[in-house]
Image (tube, rainbow, N blue to C red; front, side):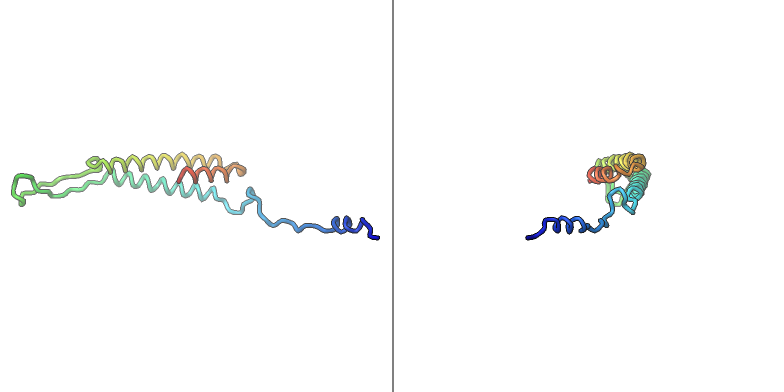
Length: 128
């Protein structure tokens, strides 16, 4: 007849190997700093694009209707002459404002390590 103590004794001496996974809050790489850096680069690119579009002018010699084609006058074009360029300027301005807001939020809320992954995920979804 078998003893019922042996399986319990074997089960008590068997140990599971320690887990080698890194907890989410103990991540060795700081993604928050990368996030803020990319948002600063986005802001810089948006500001540079707005400045270039706002200060650029193009002058071209165009023929005058009703006169011979050899008669040409200079015509200066700006971004306000095209509705597409006006929309482009508005979109770039909105992008710059969005990058400032999200960079500040990343800096302020990134100091709380328990919320960092959740915030980065929310920003990724808003960016899309």
